[in-house]
Image 1 (cartoon, rainbow, N blue to C red):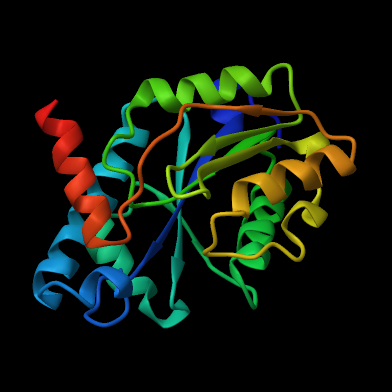
Image 2 (cartoon, rainbow, N blue to C red):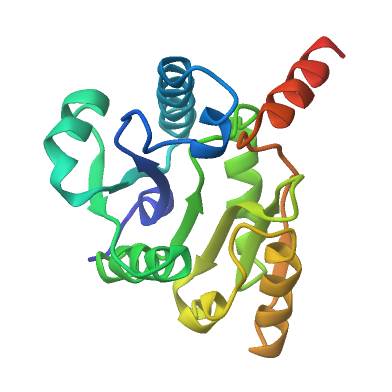
Length: 210
């Protein structure tokens, strides 16, 4: 598949879960009302999708669990494409999503989280701009992980996601090392805060007040 419009060959994959109590933001739910956590999560996902829709890039929602596809479509609408998350861990699920998108004909793909309240269209535009001269782009998060990772089709390698200690503060550093070891050039995009804990919410509120 070839795209006459270069932006149509660029996709942004949003990783999301069906908004169910006990299934989303479990670390946050340990300290907060579960109904509020689900409400917050739903708003974060909707805000992320709306941000992508403000760009010329193609939005794709990569969701889990697989049996909740109709719920996801009823919630987020049929104006976006949907992919089921497949794989044993987060790395495998991200890798499968990249492969599926490149097989559909996209030349550049970003994968982003759905819990980044500070995300704006210019952050995505910057990331794709960095992919013009690099194999990969990574958006650091404040917790030592990343909120965005992207590849050119020819620069993608599933080995980047192998043996990464997910949910630790080593994720970003280990991923950068993997890219370097594979001979891939990786640029850093903007640093943004994701929301996993009450502390993250408090820091977000502090940032807003500033």
